[in-house]
Each structure stands twice: as C-alpha cells, then as structure tokens.
Image 1 (spheres, rainbow, N blue to C red):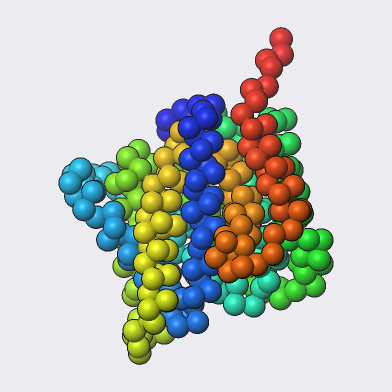
Image 2: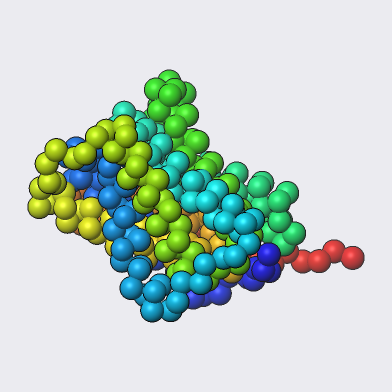
Length: 298
C-alpha cells in the first residue's frame, strides 16, 4: 500500500473539480432516468465511461494484473464502487427527496474517517480531520435545511437504507482502492469494463432490452454522464484516494449537493439562497482545515 501525502493546492483543485463533475449527475438523471429506469441508466453510463477511456488505456498498454488476489480486489472494488452504489442510490432517489439523500450521503466522510483510522497505517483520525468532517456535514444540513433531518427520521425506511448502503459502499471501495497497485487510468478502465458487463447483464435479466431509443435530451444526458462523472471523475477519484487518502478525499463528497444547487441555478433557473454560499464556505473551510498537520507531542 503506497503512503499518502498532505494535500497540495493542486490536490485541492482536483477535489473541487471532482465534486463539481459529480454534482452534474443529479441534473442529468432528471433527463434520462424516466426513459431508461435506474438499472439501464447505470449500465449505459458505465459502458460509455469504459468506451471513453478505452483508446487511451489501450494506447498506454493495458497491462492486466497477474496475481489472483489483485483481481479479487479489483472485482470487489468494482462491485462496491460502481455496481452496488449506482443501482442503490438511483433506486432510492425515485422516492427520496434530494435533501434527505444528501444527508444520508453526508454520512460517508464519517465512515471514511473511522474506516481509514482502523484499516490503514497512515490515514488516522486527527483533530483537524474531525473538525473538517463536522464542518462539511454542517454545510450539507444548511443547504438542504433542517426539514431534511425530519425527513430522515420519518421517511421511507427502505429507500433511506438503500441510500445509506450506497454511501457506505463507496467507503468500502475507497479503502480497497489503496490496496490495488494499478495506475489510475488503467484501473478506471478495467473497473468500468467489469462494471459495464455486470450492469448490462443485470439490466437485460431484470428489465429486459430497452424498447425504444432514448430521446435526444436523454441521450445527451447519458453521454455527458458517461464522459465526465463516470469516465474522467473516476480517474480523479482513484488518483486522489491513492495520493491523499480516502478520509481526505471523502470531504469532497459534501460539496456535491452545494455544486448541485449551483448547477440547478445555472441550468434549470432555480433560485440561489444565501445559505448555499455559507454552506460552500463551511465545506471549503473544512477541506483546508483537513490539511493542517497536528503537532507532535513529546
């Protein structure tokens, strides 16, 4: 397992970029999921992501792992990083409010902090990291409102459990990624290819073939989801987890609902409320607090 480093300014920019890219998924899903359903949506976006990365991966030379244990780790990571969360979260969002989903996804950094502390040798809980997680979660609550907390307490338990399991699934995958010594682009291509095979097979078996081609707007949404949030953002994900650790990377998850609101303002004409700007300040502050190195005590 390679050692992690303190996040650099470039790393911080990449964290913000990844969060902004993933936030675009929520807008794209609104266009595509009514025509494809959650399972085919996941299958199509992952297939497009794999196809986008294929030329570069092949040009660089796809050196397949030779050790059985590496393949076991890659398949397990693919299940927890792509197949399981893509389906669970898409299924849950058919009935859950976006605010409730954001709260449940915001539990991911807490789980990442705990998991990284006990399962890695160099990504331990520190005061700054704990403060960063609390600032990030406070930002989410500020964006979605206190009503969302009530929704968590009284909402659809099955859908909430699905969203929570999806969030925890990402945490398991993040811890597995650090144990896989494969370059980020090649790992992304291999994982997306395996994920595409599994999801397409599952979609055919459960939902059957698509009866009609998606509309122009849905097709554009699927293409954009495949290129950016699935293809490019997964390269960033694998790179950042291996270099700065999953507990640090997980803070960027809290930025997704904030950027989602901004995209809603820009693309859908939704209103921008002042608390969104305050939430953005809290979460970004948390990202910088996470970079603080605790002083060694004699």
